[in-house]
Amino acid sequence: MIFRRFFYGLKEGAKSIFRNKVFSLASIGTTIACVFLIGVFLAVVLNVRATVHKVEQSVGISVFFDEGLSQERKDQIGKEIKKNKDVDSVTYISAEEAWEQYKEEVFKGNEDLLEGFEGDNPLSESDSYEVTLNEVADHEEVAETLKKIEGVRKVQYSEIAAEGAAKLNSLGTYVAAALILILFGVSIFLVSNTVSIGVTVRKDEIAIMKLIGAANGFIKAPFYMEGVIIGIAGSAIPILIIYFGYHHIISWMAEKFYVVTSFMEFVSVREIMMYLIPASLIVGLVIGLLGSSITIRKYLKV
Amino acid sequence: MIILDNVTKEYKQGHPALDRVSLHVHKGEFVFVVGKSGSGKTTLMRLLLKEIEPTSGRIIVNGYDYAKIKSRKIPYLRRQIGFVFQDFRLLQDRNIYDNVAFAQKVVEAPNRHMKRQVLNVLDLVGLADRLKAFPGELSGGEQQRVAIARAMVNHPLLLLADEPTGNLDPVTAREIMDLLDQVQKRGTTVVTVTHNKDLVNAMGRRVISLEDGRIEQDEARGSYDI
Image 1 (tube, each protein chain N blue to C red):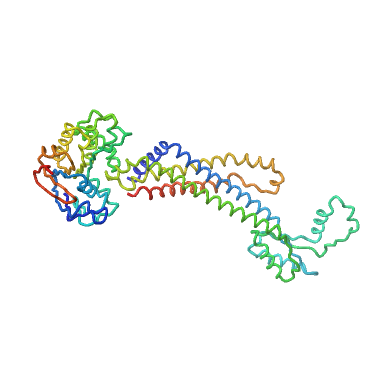
Image 2: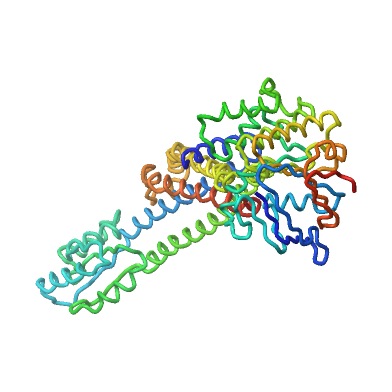
């Protein structure tokens, strides 16, 4: 019984879509636009997140020690820092390494200026731990905690970089969420309209069905199916477009906007699909079912 | 088969379309309901189909108490009631066979017997040779026969016909009435609303006359003389 009703609904729903080609195409089209944009936003968000993560990795906290602190205590401090759940990695930078790094960054190309420092390390008390964190927003909090450790003289981190990354992350998410919501609403509205055209076209048939004694579920099945087919078609097509288009867009961007893309971290199409396929299908289904049930509730009081 | 107990239906307050109507129709009876326009005939039919609810009073059809039946059970009640309208209400985009088979499909009847049942009932109404024709290609009388076949294919216990001959010439009207007569002889209760005096008088069946929403006359072998 359930199977028969399912296949009847599927057949009649598909028929209705073909019968009202123009309107069906319009609502499939808007669903495609909605899901496609969701896909694009998803891709952007995933890429931004990956980039932010990359920035996070490079925005480290430097922990400096009190003068004359023993190596033993320094090792202990290292262990203590590692215990913090927000800490991703801890690397010890010795005074020599710090000086080498400084020379590399500041005096590159002007090595002759370093002559006066030969045999001397101005940063002899500047050995430190380079700490990277899991989340951007935790920098300040973690820095405060690290300051309290005994033997720690100074904790240094780039507030601007950390805040910038955090802001980029949340702004992108808000914009994406708002636009997706708007498109979602528009798609539901259009699917609802398309299904209501199907209901209007079949008005006489529905009236006869009711009088003959068709079960409510039997009368409604084709309209639910119509919505579902529109929703699934509208989500499958953008998945394919994004799957095949992603590579082209990434390589095009890498070529044209080298400055921007050089610090970006691109995620693979596989990773995008891992989120996009289930998300799109669910969104498509929800658009289809919500759209058709609005119409069914409104026009099909059985 | 049908019990109406003190049934009133008011569309607007103070002006009842049916006014305290009580009647009893037995199983297998053939009943004409006659009366002028606005006398309450169509309201009576719509109440029996449970398309509308009575303002007061009780309706029982084939043991179903209309006040107590749950809305999801209404389809099952309607499967026991066939209906025929003046304007045939056939699906224009389907041929005769599909129009009749439609009634079986929508009640999700088993596929096995569908073809035979449809052919049998089309044979009964004399259209077995026009299966592939579309409603637009048929005369009014033939279309009404298809509508009767559609009403009968699910073996209803009650057949309601609202002005079934209203759009037909006298000869064809008589043929349709004879067909309804045959339907009744096969055991189905038939309630026919009509304006057609000649037919009512020629058939010599029970006649219920309505006037201003009330039963004026109810005679076992009545005539239409209002």
